Amino acid sequence: MTSSVGSTDRDGRERILVFDDEPVILDLLGSVLSREGYDVTTTPCDEEAFGLMSAQRFDLAVADVGLRPSNGCKLVREIRDVSPETAIVAITAYPAKEVVRFAREHAQAFLEKPFALSEFLTVVRATLGQGLAHN
Image (cartoon, rainbow, N blue to C red; front, side, top):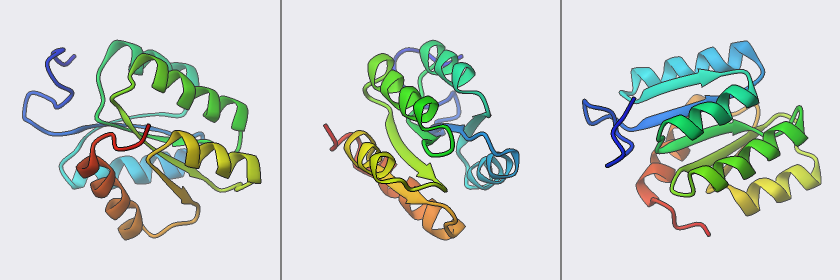
């Protein structure tokens, strides 16, 4: 658990929650972010992700909003409700118009799968660096 003073962990690392229902993507993104020095928590389950967001503080949430848009979009709304200071990067492999519009309105950044890991890391760094410039 982290303190309520900030969302960085005890070592000063920024905390990131990754939610994706594809195990390979979840493991890959978790590993890449961990290697970059972030404190990463991963989950394939939107209900678990919401529970984690309710109980802990995260600097950033990476949320899959595409395959099950109702769950991914619902999770993003819930994150906004319980942790409005948490930045969000929305990702999807199924860029339907309504999903893309939702992601652009409710997240600081949006990436369409497949994406290069270098692009993903650039977006993560930029999103963490900008704070919550998004309303």
